[in-house]
Amino acid sequence: MSNDMTGPGTGGGVLSSLGDRMMGRASGSHAKVSKKSGPLDGLFLSQLIPALLLVLVGTITIWTASLTIADANFPRHLVGVALGLVVAMLIWRYDYRNLAGMTTVLFVITCFLMVMPKIPGLGVASHGMTGWVRLPLLPVRFQPVELGKVAAIFLMASASSQYNGKIERFSDYCRLCGTLLVPLALIVITDLGSGLVVLFLGATIIICSGAPRNWVLATIALIVGVSALVVITSMTDGLPHVLKDYQLKRLLVFADPSIDPSGDGYNLQQAKIAIGSGGFFGKGLGNATQAGNGFLPEAHTDFVFALYAEQFGFVGCVVLLGLFAWMIFATILLAMRINASFGKLILVGCAALWTFQVLENVGMCIGIMPITGIPLPFISFGSSSMLTQLICVGIVQSVWRHRQKAA
Picture 1 (cartoon, helix red, strand yellow):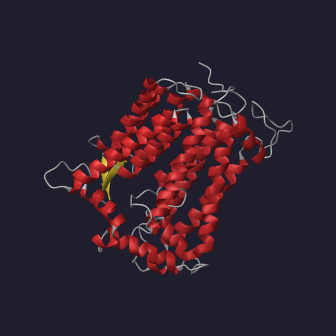
Picture 2 (cartoon, one colour):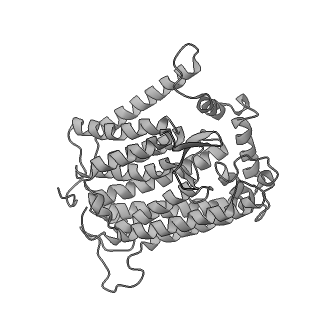
Picture 3 (tube, one colour):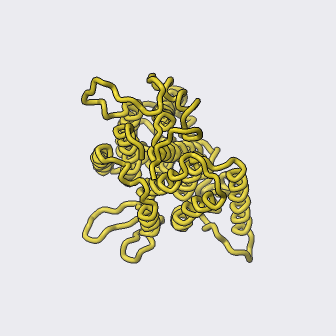
């Protein structure tokens, strides 16, 4: 079935025209290629430039962390960046349209990645977390759920693109929700934070694929009700506790940090102190005393934004968030311009992934979001996370490079 979107409700009209005008190109039913092709013609620079700048900022931040934090292995970070860039270039060259319509295969791959840490002989623990995998005969470990996020984007885009921008039957809407629910249930068992990422990007893709507003609002109400029930039962003795103790404690600390003054409450308070002590211009490169003196736990991973803010201050934070906004909005504008349903929804998924992870990581560091351990894209230490983020960059570039044809 062709997924070329040329009619109403396919992302054209006002949104496409807006995207064309903001990107400085003439509007039309298809993105047009310049007659003068050059070495950069196949690169979507509006998204690539901020992404590479974020990689640079993250590399500098981890280098400063490695000066005082033993776990912040800078050579390992560089290996992750190098591997990610190589894979991103390969994906840029690959025609993403080959994956269109492969919903069943993508579903199996996504579910397998989510359950890998539970397979005997593969799953290993790190810092008390069980979401890691070590493959036989290889000296490295990785988090398959990070790659599972990318697989989930392709899965939901493939499943949703067949409706060409308008879901008319409730059974089709339920089928899409069920497709998302299975891998979501598998990952929530291991990692609640990553499960929230998958839920957000999957729900965003479903909404942008033409789901009626009333169905979406009813689903949101159902999710809120179920979530409230899960929290209440987990807090009540004698009832099944769906949430683990540390997950429940993080939610309670979000409401009142004094509940756990030596654990997550302490982490949150130290993160706020680090951010506040950065002032307007920051303490300077390598002068993060909260992290350097060991007061801020996980300063190179979960609370890397606090580490960054202490060194570069308010001005540095504005620049960092500006780079994220630049990259995300460039991706959204590209999604509004192209007519290929599959490619459009893939771009939506990538933008949703970056948006949620940035809002959650920054939000938990300043106390407006629960602590979940979600990494800050391109900045947090971790080769698995870096690989995932650069894969998404490669995906956006692949959609741009193959934008003339439908998928």
